[in-house]
Image 1: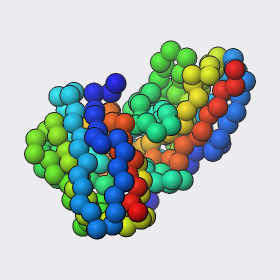
Image 2 (image 1 turned 45 degrees about the vertical axis):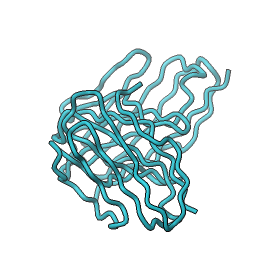
Image 3 (image 1 turned 45 degrees about the horizontal axis):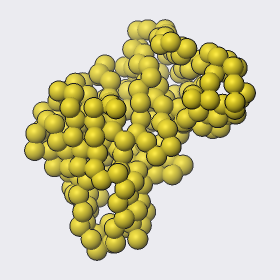
Image 4 (image 1 turned 135 degrees about the horizontal axis):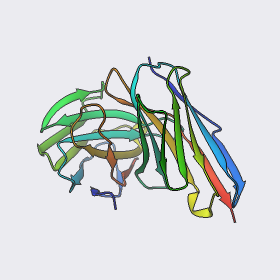
Length: 114
Length: 111
């Protein structure tokens, strides 16, 4: 186990549904990240939070809404998604978002939008 | 714009062989490079992190090298085992402070 947990592990949702992905880290880190991994594409960074503040939004559509209530928890709220949003969503954490710190990844949530 | 390429995309070897995975990047101005392992349906496990000032890092049967000036890194796996079968990803962190990933090499080690 990496110390980063994600729930649910699998999610199927319709385009009109609203759902949330949850990430929790037990490593005492201060930075948390959301990544998207689509088939045949490199991982894409979506959002970065450092000490609960969002420091990076990589031009992500507004149908994805992140929330970071504290340094240990990160959520990704989903609404009116498109089929092309189907992917593996990975959460990661690191000591801080500065350079030189390793990122530790969770197991991911496999999302299917129907 | 930084681009990371991994060759080959897939590799199959018999158990016991030594093998090399390649990673190249277009912008040599990086802070560090990280190799990850990803098992099917799972998250990423960090294997090795090489800072820009380092030439190599070793962990057990794994050795990663970095040649920043030529934009290349290699991951050497000694005495491969079926349990090494996974997708191996390399990622570089540059001036944008983002991790830029390659598309990975899918390794299959045959018993």
